[in-house]
Image (cartoon, rainbow, N blue to C red; front, top):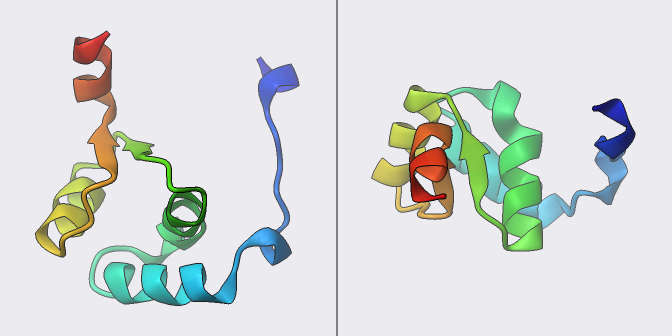
Length: 75
């Protein structure tokens, strides 16, 4: 399982992505900052099981977030 894992250092994240993510997550949970910033930067959806994160991002207009359960149902 860990052979498919890639670790990215913080410096690969653009300052712009980090700032946008920080604004979105300010009232949700800043521990997810790197994940949201990377999803924005790579223009990929964020896959999560965190309902509070999902709902909070969606309320603020961030649409590239998918609940893991919804992802599994779509397969």
